[in-house]
Image 1 (cartoon, rainbow, N blue to C red):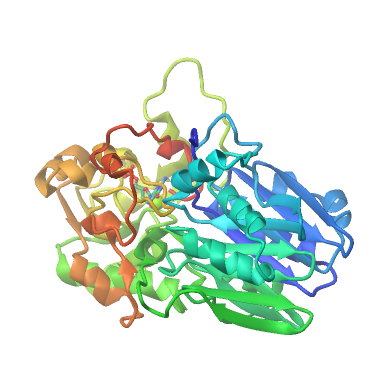
Image 2 (cartoon, rainbow, N blue to C red):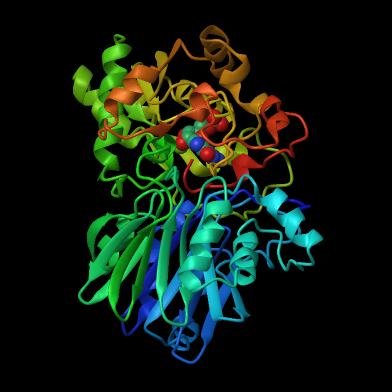
Length: 478
Ligand code: 5GP
Ligand code: MG
């Protein structure tokens, strides 16, 4: 069995057919760093073999001019990693790279396979020896054992056995392959840079390198890019069971990305407008919780015609390691990250807009800060419905027990946050704000309706699940 199996909410990127492919991947990883800050890696194919650099920490800390220049080759893939910490962080570094009967193979995966444990056990019983505890490794074993016609057949047959979320890029000696699960939980975009093809979790990566966004890799589609150009193959029917992660739109993706074919910035702005329409309240200013609440707050302020005030200032240089003073200072952690501009809120009725409430603990501290800065009233507005259920497809939510909305009603939440009022965007409002009305979204975190079944049902009730150190993670995004 997997121990400390990481739940991956990561980012992937790939380039085929560019002279400095590893440097382009490096830049793309830089752009999608928000999707994972625990580690990163690049694998490049140089014609006679693979080279790789992988490590823990931020992209800027792992790669440098020397190790990038040493990775020559025209095709490369990369990964930024965000997972629960475990003893095996190093060996789980991605892209996973192997040499097997068909040559070299590397895989970078974003998502979470819900049947990995089961496949893992079956393979182990048949003699497989696993090198990592990452769910992605099961795919490599499946491909290697599949001695069918060619690589593509082996891949297609293997992908059909996987359940759950995967947006992935694969590299072998001849080609770059991009694949997305039939539900299409996580995004995956295709672009072009002159004659080269590029693939990335988010289109903001294309903007950085000057590539053009062509389209998304479709749910249930495999795209193969090699000397002959680009080919596409389906391994699942179109739209049969689509379940795009709605939380990518709400929180996870960068607002300058196009997610599932639409501007994420615009979707968030529309969520703010909808939230304001549903929850008007007399006030003087609208204050976002940066960065995640900014787009919705813009829409909110626009709708209620109130001044938008950046009264919470965020320190962008908060790393994951800092030295705490030996005497305890109350609320130290959040003060390191946010400060409230007294002059902006003093004596005012303030509407605070954030994208979501998870545990409520950060928001509570922020509210206290605004109150101490002299606000007369504080009204908390959330641009998503109450998060009540954990995610099993790659979003790092805590257990049900820790999700404040799972066990508290609005009045209790207002009391916990110490605000004058609290209101959420309605479920219908959220669906109206989403621009691609013809698509189907996974909304499991809001309604508990899980589109792909998994065995560990007991996790939903919060039993048998490790405490997640959510506050320590994604510190740059909160
Ligand atoms: P809370 O007050 O619930 O402790 O924190 C709310 C903040 O958590 C919001 O600003 C929101 O942007 C952020 N958030 C939303 N989703 C996630 C997630 O999946 N992981 C983490 N760590 N934070 C999240
Ligand atoms: Mg936030």
